[in-house]
Each structure stands twice: as structure tokens, then as C-alpha cells.
Image 1 (cartoon, rainbow, N blue to C red):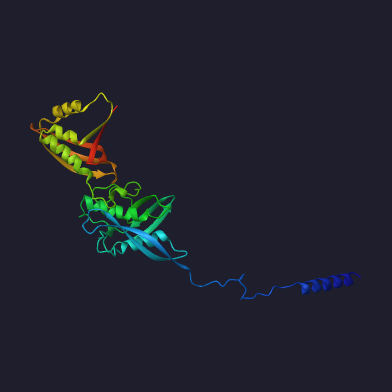
Image 2: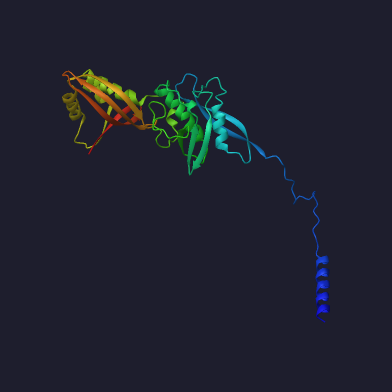
Length: 286
């Protein structure tokens, strides 16, 4: 009896299986799209920054590049930048041997690792700024990137080449786009030149007082006169600029020689603000 029951159940299962319907796939139907073995390519417009041909400021170059669906757009733009400008009105300060070694993005900051070929120790302050911000401005054209941290051969650097700090991520500098570079250090040199020549009124032209209204220009002028009357010479040994913007800071080391045999080595930090006539030294009073 049990055998008959088992046999009947097996027959019933076989009948049910044979009745199951299978959908026939028609490759011509739209709900079964053909998957292409080749990634989709799209044209994308990008903006790249280069120094102008006379190395005065940054200019933009618009390009249309082909991007595959899965490609990293930031890498493509950096490699496009490394190819150099196509316009005769632009110039690249990047060595042709420079390579992008790696790229990481954390939040809105791009960590860009270049080969050591990027560093040319012969660049002066202005050209260093033009090179640095041609990179930073190009990468921050990507909507999701607000800051750029540059690494060289996988290592952090405090100073890019000689004068500009890169110890923390940098933002785009609109101040250098189509505007002639103005050295933040020039106002400091003009200030000390005026003190050296005992022209204290001229020295005060490079100063902007902030804070306590009871301290006026006459007070500061008297202070300068009492402290720098016997200065016979000065030498700025090294200096570092925080960023190129309308507000920045310059850290510097200098020697001051006096008419007596004394020489004083000073480490100074000046906050600068750019006004219509140029940078001024901000002096804060509590």
C-alpha cells in the first residue's frame, strides 16, 4: 500500500513539473536590451588653467575630452593638464617628464601624488605660484573638489618648491586668474627699505592698523623711529607664503644689522591684506 502511495506522489510531481511554463526570450524585444561589450563614451567639457605666455597670471583653456563611463574624470583632467597647453597664448611650467603617480579623494579634498619631476628648484616665487595654482585651480574645477593636497613621490612637503606652503590642502585662487601676480613679499621689502632709509612716513603707507582706536599712526611712527633709527642693513634669509589670495600670511627669517656691532636674527609672521594699491601689512592691537 505504501509503495502505491509513493508511486502516485512521484507521478503527481512529474505531472506538475511538466506543466510549468518557461518564458521564451525574444532578442528583438525592447525589454531585453543588447549589452555592448564596449563601454559607453561621452564627450565632456573641461577647464584647464595655465600661465599666460608672458608668465604674468593664469588663463583658462576650454577642452572637450572623451570619457568612458567607468573612468575617473579627475585623473583624466590631470593627465590632460600634463600634456600642456594647445593655445599659443598659454605656457606650461610642468616638466614633460612629470607623471601622476596616484590620486585619492577624501570628502571634498583631492590628494594628488606627482613624480619628483614636477619640482624645478630654479623657479622664482612668481613662477612657483603660477605652477602651483595652475594645478590647484584645474582640479578644483570639478564640482565635488574644493581643496587640493599635493604630494611628491608619495611624500608630504611643507614647502612646494622654495616659497609657497603646501603643508595643508589649498583652495582655488581666483586672485591669480587674469590678474598680474603681485608678490606678497614685495610689501615687506618695501616696508623695511623705508625703515632703513629712515623714511617713516613712507613705511606707514605699507601698514594697516586694526583694533585699538587709541593707537594711531603717530604712535606707530614714533615706535618705528625709536626701534629702527640705528638700523644699518637687513637681510631676509628665507620666507614662506601661506597662499596666494587677497588675505595671506608670510613667515620669514631676517637679520637686522645696527650701526653698533649688534646683529639681531628675527623670525616674523606678517598678515597681509590686498587693497586697490597693493598688499598692506595688517598690524593688530588689542
